[in-house]
Amino acid sequence: MTRAKRAAAELETCGPEGAGAIPGQIVWTLKRKPTINDVARLAQVSKKTVSRVINQSPFVKNETRDRIQSVIDQIGYVPDPQARGLASQRSLLIGLIYDNPSSHYIVNIQYGVLGACRRMGYELVVHPCDKTSPTFFAEVRQLVERQKLDGVILLPPLSENNELAALLTELECPFIRVVAVPLDTPRNTVVYHDCQAAEEVAHHLVELGHRRIGFISGSPTYRSAHERTRGFIGGLERHGVMLPPELIVQGEYTFETGEACADILLNLPDPPTAIFASNDEMAAGVYKAAYRRGMQIPEDIGVVGFDDSPLATRLWPALTTVRSPSQDTGRMAAEKLIGRVLQDDLGPVEPTSVIPRLVLRESVIPPRR
Image: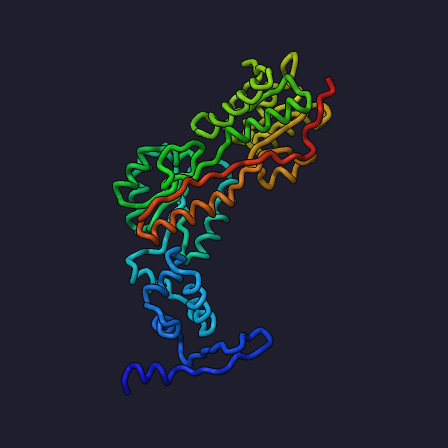
């Protein structure tokens, strides 16, 4: 028996069944485990076209994509990740490399990346590291080469390291940098506009009537800290409100530094009526410092944070904060990276931006004084 006849003998056709069936539609069933060749034959396309649909390539007509997907659904074809990797000479692995103290931020980014990976047939390798370690660059090189990563997502502050980007370029490893400013070509970046969001905080506080406002900045090793500072001070100045040096205290994006910085601000002879902390962890530290003094939020001191982490709604009163869509950021970074890999890095890639927004809750009201 020829190969064609054997293949035909393994297939059965039957008419449409059930209320949702389409009149005239052919329903295929298979007597054995289906293969990509079966999908190609039944959909009357090439094996390469089926592969493109499986890998979610945009270079397939919608009509063809629907026909192929219909066959895949009917015969129950499930792509073999190992076979896909061997056929394409890809590992189907991407890396997420970070050195960041905010656990909420990292977890949300990971959720977004994992969601995209599952949809696009990839797995994630998570690699926390210490950017100050003398072996840092050697560790990244080892990770990329041993795992044969198809690409890497870099989170701040590592994403701001041009030497690291140069290393990945040398290794011919595609990468996406999640950054606060466009440090690279649009192909290599997802940009979040913290400056614009911090301006919105300034506008909101001034609109409520606050004029003496404390500001807890983030770590100067993060570009995001500079952008949030620039946006907040610039936003106040546009309303004619100046921020004197004694009302600016530098934190490190941690709960402990938020509390310590709030102590400095609240101990001033003329303390602020509101405090803007550059992330929610530090804002929570402000809550503790205020309550230790018997101060009520928001009656005695208003508080605004940044990130809209789960912590923001667990504090009481709930924290007014900037929603930085970390999960969406992770998803977009992964989709952009995997899309580049599957298309062999050809063609232009449009700029990808994330716009944080202010979320109003109960932690700040017009000042009493």
